[in-house]
Image (tube, rainbow, N blue to C red; front, side, top):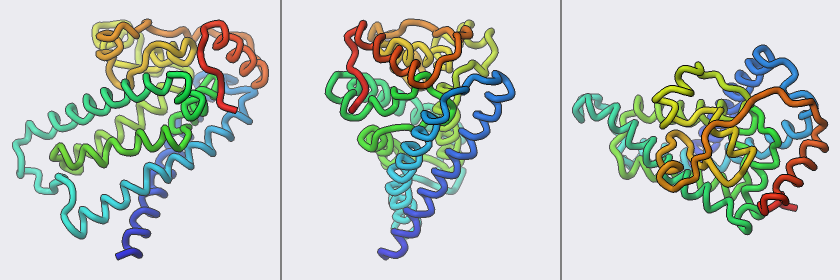
Length: 266
């Protein structure tokens, strides 16, 4: 039993880590082709993003591996394999319910982490990426990683999910986490600036969060930001003069101090 649990947790940790390296690495290469030099001078920051992201991979992977073992051995969770166990319309609805629930959890925990004490204790690790890169999607302090790692393990006990639906949810989580941080907008402007863009979060929206901190807290949808008055619209990817990592950090700290934001941990 213990060996099975260990192997399942280890396997899932490796899967999460490899998925991160492949997806973030792929979008980092796309960034190099699409916006040459965007990450110039950020080698030290990227190494830090890699370190914290791989730590987060274990924090995400271990509970997922334990649940996968429990599902196989004891039927834990509401995950079902018979596609016809529920009406086919339930498949897309279950995906939407997971994304809506995750978005609500993320908004409120993310907003809480911008309070001075939680920010300094944990969330400052993520905002130490100035500006963030495609490698920053999972660059979290362990406390913040843990707050995100409980989402899917909780949802599989609450919402019946087919593996296809679970795969779609995990794919959307990964895609949005990486693309929202890579420093340029991959979606067409007609979508970002159109009716759909008024409710969906893309890199342009999340860019403003990293620039101004006290706004745009959502993950997938702009609903909570709009309802709570924290939506400040889209950010600006206009080219800026290149700075060293040290200069970027100093400028970021000065901006935080001017706005009364908590500074970086340490």
